[in-house]
Amino acid sequence: MSPLPVAAPMTVPVQDRAMPAIQAIDLRKEFRRRERVGRRFETTRSVALAPTTFRVERGECVAILGQNGSGKSTLVRLLSTLLLPDGGTARVFGHDIRTDARAVRRLVNRVSVEASFFKKLSAFENLSYAARFYGIRPADSRVRIPEIVERLSFPADRLREPMEHLSRGMQQKIALARALLTAPVVLLLDEPTTGLDPRSKLEVQALVTDMQEQHDATVLLCTHDLAEAEELARRVGILHRGELIALEAAAGLKLRYGAATLEEAFFAATGGRLEDEADREADEGGESP
Amino acid sequence: MMMRTELTGLAGVVERNVYLVKRYAWWEVAFFVYTVASSYTIVLIAKGIQTTGGRLDVNRVTTILLIGAVVWAYLSSIFEVLTDTVAWERWEGTIEYTFMAPLARSVHLLGMGVFAIAYGLLRAALLFAVMAFSFRLAMPNANFLGAFAVVAIASVSFIGIGMMTAVLPLISPEKGTQLGFMAQGLLLAVSGVYYDVAVLPAPLRAVARFSPATYTLDGIRSSIIGGTGVGGLWHDLWPLVVIGAVSIPLGLWVFHQGEVHAKRHGKLKRSG
Image (cartoon, rainbow over all chains, first blue to last red; front, side, top):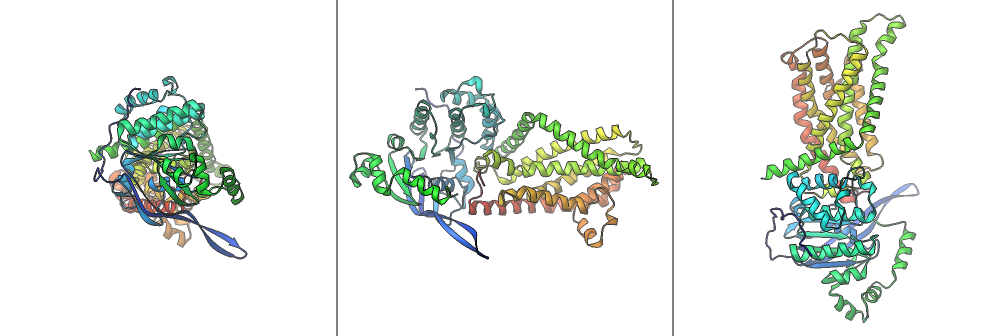
């Protein structure tokens, strides 16, 4: 397999290369809603992420499992500096997500379940302007974009087509290309393979492994896919209703819950089935922010 | 090195907007036709008054109204582009990726401003040409250099105010854009776009003093109708310089406060 032609990492303000890639201490987030009760307004609070402490070492891949609404996306958005925490701290290579957000942004990129793009623009146009946001000059991106998409098995002749003409799987590959183009030191993956066909899923998974092995990237993978978590991650965490209830190697999780498979361990830890959670969310009116 | 990175980011913002204009080219044509039509209805007022027996210098009043319509179109373009900083990105779902990029917010907004000025100027110049040609307006004394100087300096203030309205969709995903139109409407009412500010009630005249559009319109009318050069426009230019110097940092501060609010309440995301 040819090496992934990602950009040379930016001059990254990694303060100490021996320090953890991600370190969260009592990191928490809640959302407040004002609702009318009779003639008064009342503020209700929902905990999206209970005080959470964990660390991810440099070059490690950690998977976080959890149902919809368990706090996975909140965790990713906190680490992406898109949310401000209500308490605790999180650092990315020593840079605080709250006080040193710009340094964090230089180190982090993200692929989420929704491949969000300007749909009328072509894949090339979307990638080209996004690369500039990371300081990559057009002369460089013109070379790198075709290389990266080729490695992703994306047909080069479709690079100039509007995104809205591409399939969901192809759009997700471009989303991955957008992240890889900026050579992130920490890659946050929020259900990156949801909705992909089996072949595309395997290709994306192979790329994640490449990023780790060849580019020393640290990966935080939030997923519903237990097999994917077991395949890619050195450690697996379980986030349940905003609480990180476990974080250890898949084998350790199975042992702890006396389970033969990771799926059984997950159900034993969360005390339910995925379908039950889906029903609960439907009753509550959807996912929290 | 740092400066080059920032300039590359700024160029990225401009590049993206150029792509969008190209991809939505036919929509641009349609909106331009709409702008011409709405400006036409306003500029025709002078001739309309004459046909009902009113006595006025039709060429002069038509030119006054035309300048109002063109400046208003320019101002609207700038506000529209800057409001899209949030509104369009939220609709497309790209907002999270843009706001988590290591691009200084000031550079991001400045990039939107640079594009807005270029786009607005092109549109306004086209509109002016089409309307002036349609009405066969005579502008024997016009000093276009003076008018351009006024527009150039006023643009800084417009961008500062645009930054303040751009943040509204971040605070209220549902109604924020409409609130931006409200701010535009307020400027329209107090700045003498189609009439002299002297006709306004005293409280509104006081507000008009703080609107950059007031000085812009006065300066452009002096240049186009009276032929005043840059040197004679100082009484309009210095307030524009002062308002511009205040509005840019104020706009950045307001936007920052809105961004912090959105990040605290989980509103910096695609679905609002």
